[in-house]
Image: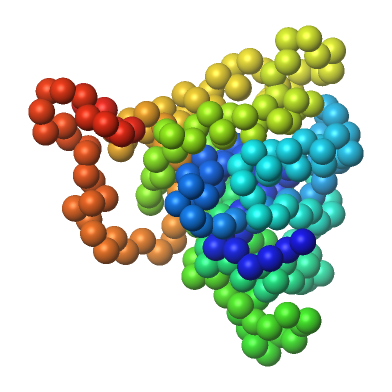
Length: 253
């Protein structure tokens, strides 16, 4: 059941959220924030598995991350709709969930559905705040839509340290056993089912982590820069004060 939450994470397909921002969601959950997940399609165009299998896998992944709810629309995997009806369906979810932030796919990606999902997330989040648009739920506009990265890399607006919850992110991805690397699987190999792709998940997190001098991080892009109430605290621990390793996720260079 859709409930009011702090963050609504939107993905074009089941597993997009886990790959792009699963660590940040788990880390924010540890800090007392709540989140829900909206999948815009059922993943029915996938080469491996079935929509029914993906539904079971996505429910388990949401449980691992600590989601308050997960819900799915049926906007067409492989040809994700962005028409007015699709906007209204996403608007209804935004108004019911009343998130403070929306996490959405970045607009530049190899998968056209991710590109469309990005545009749809932005338009629906804005239109959800129009009081003149009468729906069952009252108007609500999130404070901001911020974008997680999928296939391509962009200059981050901010990073989230996911070191302490990285194992949980990986576990949520492994919940999609039909989609990712399995040396015993006889299904066709896909872009995301190779061993190299799975190894790249940690490599990517380590690459972003190096920018912040933490072990693992996830990157986000925001059209509006976030305001830091305490920039001193934001960089605390980046440089070691003495040669001895310090407690916590940051480590000396």
